[in-house]
Length: 276
Image (cartoon, rainbow, N blue to C red; front, side, top):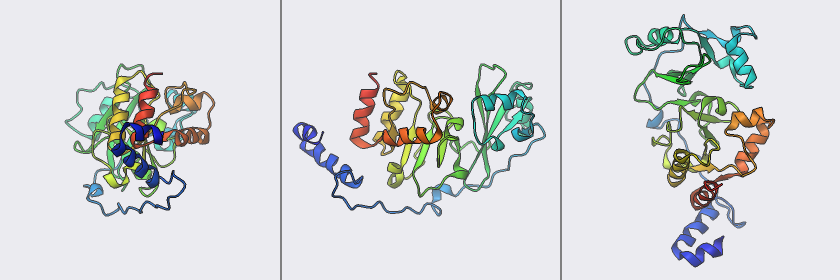
């Protein structure tokens, strides 16, 4: 690869060698990435939001194992059920949580509730996953309109590698992970400082024919993030599907780590993957 790039563009070849040196991939590098202190960053100085509390919501842990919501989560092998809630009147729940903003939502709508907290465990948003056949599978209620919809900020360590999945359920199978509410929560916002982006791994759904996903993968890699490009032998659409098909959580993490790329290598892998 190195010789091939050198033949095409000498300047690009120098950039490629520098990237390999920084990643310790050339066998001679003793380069160590500096630890980044983010705790005092202005990025994480936010107003204090309300905590999660509503008379229209009940913790999943209190439901009978045969309850439709709990059975749904058990069937999908979702971990962290002690962090989730249920409501059968989502419209009432939404208007109770934030009065005068969500009055038009359907009242008798049964949904699993996924709270989004900030690093101080203050509520940012609540996502409702339909279990009643609604056309809108996910509805996200934002407590703070100006803040991006990101799940899992209360559980991550900013000094370690961070995985970013497309949805909260997928992120629950990964260590030190956050999730976008949809595939645009972080990649369309300059959320992570440039100096730490190489340690942030985006794990998009495994849909090579989806032009929007391909576009976002190319964008985040161009912005300095790392990205997982699943190998051809992985046929499952997302992480949850991989778990349901028999992969263990450790196997899923190994597959992601072994297929994570950045910089020019990421672009080459994505362009090859999109033609599968």
